[in-house]
Length: 412
Figure 1 (cartoon, rainbow, N blue to C red):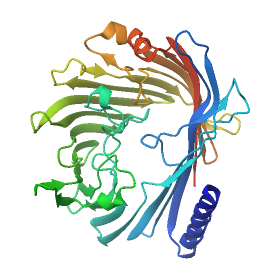
Figure 2 (figure 1 turned 90 degrees about the horizontal axis):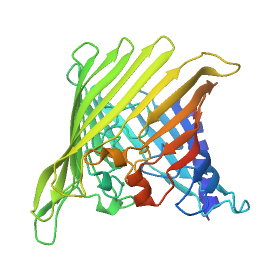
Figure 3 (figure 1 turned 30 degrees about the vertical axis):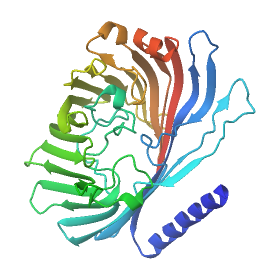
């Protein structure tokens, strides 16, 4: 049944591609694959575990595997297929490929049209990710919530979007020169497949009004290299909210921004909302000749008085040098990255806590290369993870692990 389903999807994509070409629509797309060529992990007092060719399969993190976008200027759409195949090879049992079922689903797909030149309406996936975000890792923006609640079932582990990022209805307005407004209503985060619960406003059993998720964003360009941005996203009644504002500069080799993010949680005990944390999301990128220097340092200050909710920080630093063309490879760029190891977003105690810096100081070092071959972009490195004392105690792991991450992206 699964194979027939996959074959049907592939045939559907092929049919759509042919239809787009027949009607003369502009198309672009990409295919992406990420994972680890090899990985060594080890628990305390246990033998090390080695896995090879392990593909990523985190739906809240990974990019869509296959994306097709089409447009004729006044209408268009986006078809995005996410897939994950658990095909890792276990060293202790090479015949066990770990293929316990692949995962396949459409997401971040939508249709849009423009009733006027300044207004765009969208049906389907309505997430807006056009505000400031880092360009080095997978966090996208800083997270103001407790590091114990960063798993996607509590809050989006990766707040890519400035407004809601689910299926719903959205708009984009450019009626005022230099000002871009977007907004959307959608189903709540963490309700995949629950289309029947999309109703934005309703009443519960007590007759009290209940509303769903919504969001608004604004970008203003005053006519130079500076941009002011603001956003608010609300996950619905008695649920979390995020407010963001930012100022940034892009020009003369710089891309940099300062973006405070405000986390608002629902306090069930006191039956009210409260500002629970502020993340000062700081990012800087500078290109000089063939060199690129990048730094991303989100600092999260928690405002609760709970003992298990300390303030914390993360950091990523990278230096890259572009050698140009090497053989058949373009933009061949050796690089080295150094930083805290929580760029997976869900590692317990993989944060540097302000109340216990010495025992929570963890970092990884990743020398690597990236290059292009025709339309294919490839990244590979050797990542060495040095765990803190706090991390090893909580996770019963060894203080050192390693992996060989890779990604391959083809654009067409």
